[in-house]
Image (cartoon, rainbow, N blue to C red; front, side, top):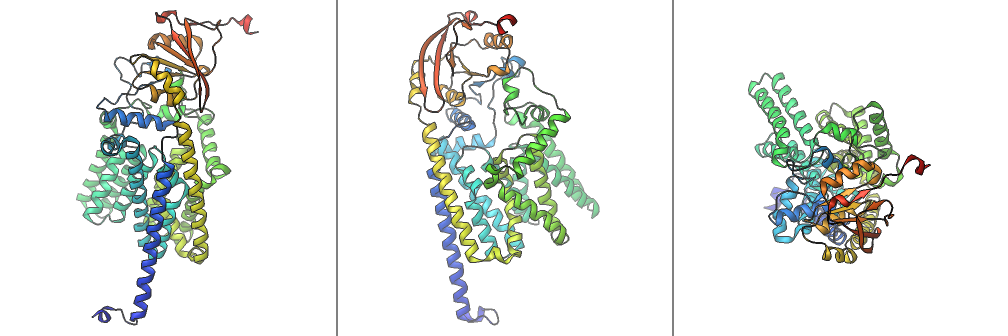
Length: 525
């Protein structure tokens, strides 16, 4: 019976060899999947620092039943009235991932929930790459490239990080799979769900949704299908409305307008400049030009970023090559992938180039790579593939160990914990020129912590924000000269394992007693 099912010219021996090859491929995929899980779980043993402390604090706040209010404050938002009695200090990264992690965290804990979702998104992206590549190349090429994605440095690093980009890559994978099967009901539903979830997560999905709606409308118009035209217009309106009400769905204290973010995230300044300073910048041609130059330099010429940028840069070259030699054959792919790549470059030039932003477009990047791999014999050479995967495994092991060690260092809070023990639960704290302010804010939650960078505020602005905040404690990264600050009493100094010594001062009984002396011009000379 089995022989009757075989294709002409396909004997039992050939079938046996095919089964063996498939079995070997499955075994290798399983081994890679297990290796990826081991690397991620070893590397993701705890938060490493920076924004990850904010995400962890926010998820734990939701799990504890609290409102989406952050305990981290900044001078700029207080002085401008963006945050105050009538404007709560909402989470800075409020969105679906925070609440999804809080739901899963009820069973696993906040941090582990985030990492598990990262891993699920990681494998979902690999599935999207496989499905897309399988439609355009061979099964072997699709399998190899999707496995390569699983071991790629940026994807592994983001899976170990309590940051948004791996989740956003998972949402992009939903959109890609929906697009691949757009002629089916399931595909349309998946594409729509991806756009809706993405639109309340990141502006890039609003742009993708608008592009898709315009394409749908144009397609309907060209075919004289008025129902399709109507559907396209409705889809475009829905995406616009959804983008407008995002703030109501997930209130946030992030930049109130996209233009403010574009103008104030500058190459020579931290991305939080708008929060630390009283006066922000406005958009001008000079700043935009410098941002474009910086973005392209970091994408293509920065040696430190090459291991993370290599696949995106390769996909850009492949896109150009396909456009030159096979644009008629790959017209739909080139249009869709070209839009995504353009949106990525719009993001890194208008906002700021950070290597992790590439992760959200990884499904498109690796599908393009799979097409090129299927056309060049060297990419199918077993020795070449083995070398690539060995190198990827070594890199992955290094990154996992690096993440593990950084997390161990950042989680050493024994000294800081002694401070938490004596600070009253209702106290308000100013962190003044403290590099570890994010970690400090997390340890002190739910106590309000105001982070001040003295170089971004003059003395008058510092006095105003202090009077608004009314602190009980003042912590500084350096000992304060007695003739510069009055009304402060040193109560403790300690050594932070990451950022050196911290000096804790108690503010006088009356907050008005805390003042900053300004030096006269004669003194400065």
